Length: 131
Image (cartoon, rainbow, N blue to C red; front, top):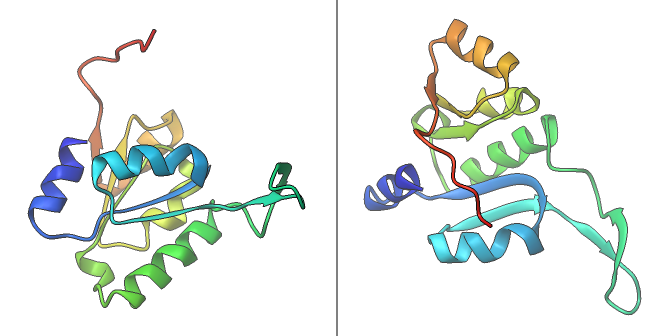
């Protein structure tokens, strides 16, 4: 959250690209002042109820990387000046779409990749339970 605020303070476009569906991400994104959210779209039936299926592809891997490239192009952002954050190696192609990759609480495999590539690794000082 602190990093997101730093980007906002610099006037950066802050976008969340996630495999999660919009109904789970959008409320927090609004509170945090995120500019854009790109999510996996869920299919709804005729009554507007979720069917359990996705509409289109899951926003992960090459799909997320392509979404990032499209977003950067649409907003005239030089990819070499953009920063991507992730926690999982499934996002490796996404991380490589920008000039700066930062991994947050990475999986062990992504942590090894980040160290080899010289990427910043962020680990919180503490984790709090929400109950």
